[in-house]
Image 1 (cartoon, rainbow, N blue to C red):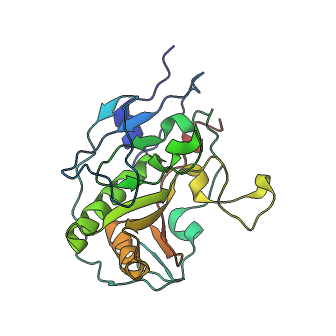
Image 2 (image 1 turned 135 degrees about the horizontal axis):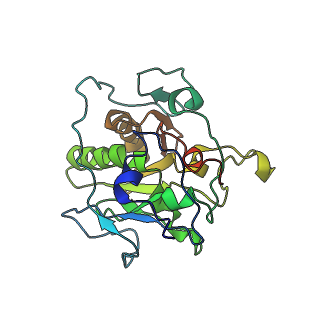
Image 3 (image 1 turned 60 degrees about the horizontal axis):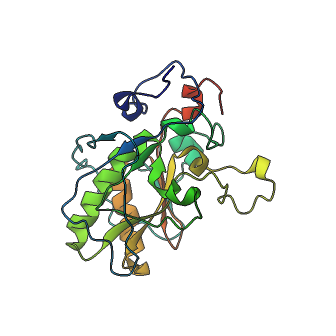
Amino acid sequence: MDARIPVWMAVSLGLMSLSACVAPSEPSTVLVYIHAQNTDPPTDTPARHLTPDALVTPTPAVAPVSPACAIETLAPGAHISSSGSYTQTEDQAAGPMICRIARDSCAFGLLVRTLDTAIFFQEEEAAPHDDEDRRMHPAMLMPLSRLRDLVAAEWKGEARLVVSDAYDALLEHDLNQADPARKYSLHFEGRSIDLLLSPYEPVRIDRLCALAHCAGFDWVHHEHTHCHASVKAMSLCEVCSGQR
């Protein structure tokens, strides 16, 4: 029995409730290819050959950014929710972590993998984890696409959006927690992403975090060296009815 999830269902998971899925013996991955005019990698990072390994589909249409977004910068250490609150926690704004998604799970098969050529993905982990910076919850695609366009407009091609971390199966986040069983981060569900610019200029991070808020992420935190952003969406673990 083919238990792969249709593309339209995976991309809509952030907006609709699904009952369950059956864990495949080898979890499938939805591959999302986003066309862009600039296909050259940043000059300060090595080029990578990208080979599509799954179903290819266009990105959803990107909705315009709300004119109500008016912040110009986000200070180091500060965070902001989609409602404009500077006091809401990540759990309050984006929802709590439900589980840590394992690579051999049903939920892992529902993560999307994007090959957007206008964004640089660091992919620093050793194989097979080297593609995890590209894997994320489907609800991440829309704000990430908006941010890509905002960065291009802001710096007129002089800076390029970089994803340094997205889904994390190695539990590299929550560094203050020594017990792996107690580690907590929305990265483990693919609902958080860490963002930089190339070339890297620390003075631009304040503005990048503001643009991430304008792009529609539900919670943005200026973590001094980068922007951490999260989305509020149904956990893929819940979609898989408890299969982790």
